[in-house]
Amino acid sequence: MSEDRITLTGIRAVGHHGVFDHERREGQLFVADVVMWLDLAPAGRTGDLRATVDYGTLGQQVHDVLAGEPVDLIETVAERIAEIGLGHAGVHRVEVTVHKPQAPIPVPFGDVAVTVVRSRTHPTQSASASV
Image 1 (tube, rainbow, N blue to C red):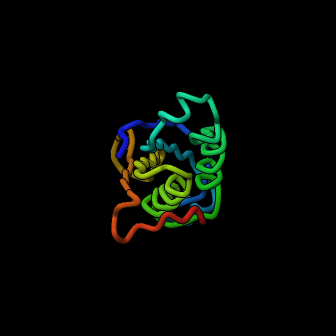
Image 2: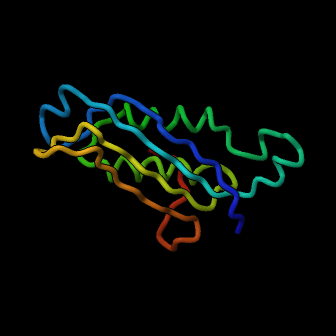
């Protein structure tokens, strides 16, 4: 398996995820980082966008999840984004970090984030791109 990667960091959107009513009502900033492992040699040799992942498309897809249907947990948001990443041709592993920098935590903090790592080779992992 190739160790080549595409990394897209700092995708931002206002979403309405959370377990509290005020989070659902008012919304807050969410940030996502995505790392995808795939063989980039064909794209490097040919210059053909079809041989890689269009990170403009990926960025829009991630943004749509962050700003989309509200869920209780950012773990769910991360899973949905991971499914999208694995849905791109050639991607065999994805790492997704979802940050919730305005989380309702009663102490001073810099950030809260969850990270999931998913792979096509994982026996229970779907490669579906549906969300």
